Amino acid sequence: MKLKKGRFAKWGGREYELASYQRVYYLATEDSDAQKDGFKPQSGKHGRFIREVSLKELDDAYEIIPYTVYGSHRFLLEGITDDGKAVLVTNDPFVQDKLPLKPYGLHEFIMEIPFEQIKIDEDRIPILGFNGTGSRNGRGKY
Image 1 (cartoon, rainbow, N blue to C red):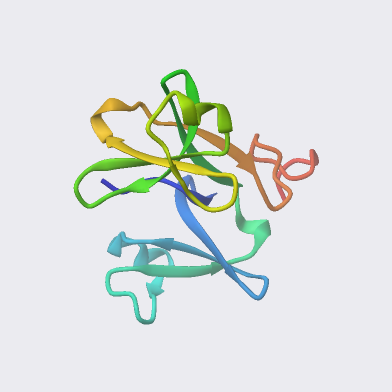
Image 2 (cartoon, one colour):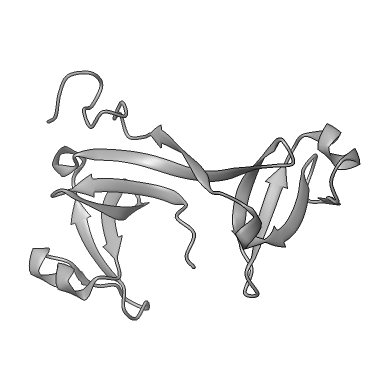
């Protein structure tokens, strides 16, 4: 299973991963049919296609941050291991006494549990001037 995490944008009624390099924005997908819409193979990444876009072309842009509530505590979902375990991270030091956590970075704790034991929720945080309703800066779509 692939974890949905990171920056995304809506363009042409579809959702794509969003990447940027030196203030140039790119939509990314693994759908080869996207070549009909101007997507080109991404150099060095087999099966991945990108398309340069301007911010004015986007319908919406946001960051998705997956999380779960486990043992009555909120954890960020860092990833999924090859053997199907969910990697959970928290910075809540009080959870350390209640669950089998290990130190992870500065003031963070980590644990792995079977993926089947969690329900994934997500926070969607508007980015690039969008306000979460598909419009930019409250002035409607560009």
